[in-house]
Length: 116
Image 1 (cartoon, rainbow, N blue to C red):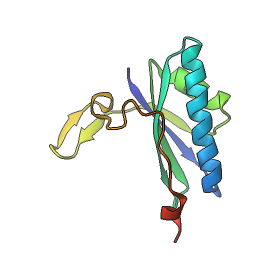
Image 2 (image 1 turned 90 degrees about the vertical axis):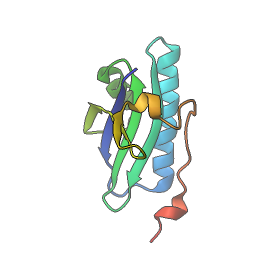
Image 3 (image 1 turned 30 degrees about the horizontal axis):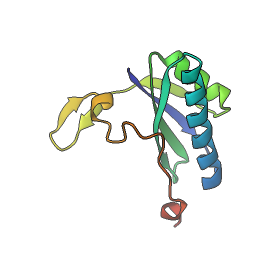
Image 4 (image 1 turned 90 degrees about the horizontal axis):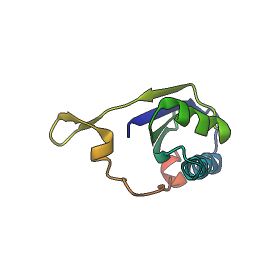
């Protein structure tokens, strides 16, 4: 399935709120899949200095990914199909075949690493 990147601007968000949004994305994705709309949350990258967040989802189309985020009440401003690059080799490859977290349902963000 294709991978989609959802971009968000989250000024003022606390780590606890970010963790709750991640949990909602995972749970909502799982519910959609159980209801016959396959979608998988992959991971989130948060840039605290810019309050910018990028989340990756695997799904058959962007509409399902957008619906998951709306249902989970997580704001976003774009949803785009993505591709990955293998930095070790320097060649372009699909995210879905190179994703090191494939098979994991989530990862934890350590709030301590964002403190200045």
